[in-house]
Length: 188
Image 1 (tube, rainbow, N blue to C red):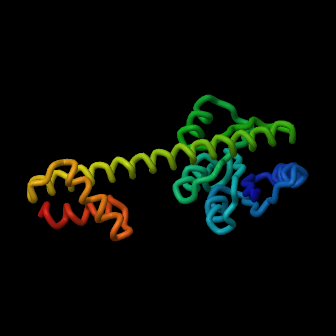
Image 2 (cartoon, rainbow, N blue to C red; image 1 turned 180 degrees about the horizontal axis):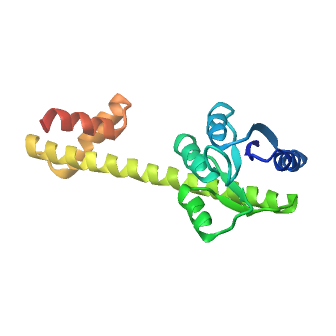
Image 3 (cartoon, rainbow, N blue to C red; image 1 turned 90 degrees about the vertical axis):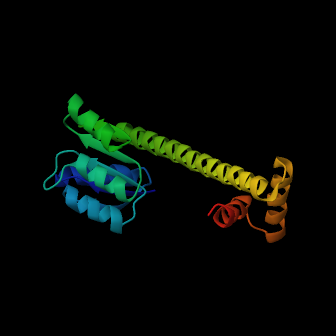
């Protein structure tokens, strides 16, 4: 797994890099502030980011928000600050973990594993939602096309559906494409 680190304190950044590399992860980019983190998230294409909250130019939470807007990935925030307002802001930005400093490798690795698992779960749910939305749109188009065939050609519902299915099989195109063509032709 390729990791982006954003930490303005050099010693902490080096410790963090060492912990990650000891765990077998590849640190593909290191940022000293939030703006640099956003730029590196785009150019270095990491699989995960570990961002400090308090950084110059752009704080870690706003950097996380911008990164997630452009390229979804699991993000873990590390911070010496654990106020509820910061944790809430981080959650609202879409980060997947929040780790309080000082931390050890034994703390960091489970936080990363949990963030990765949560990201994978959410990605699977989003794919499922997209799939269901696509199926619903197809179903609506097919129902509308069936109705138009019934109205314009005096077919029964069963015959209209059979005609759609036959056209789909003959053309090798999905029924939704056939239905949308019928809607465009007869629904105008």
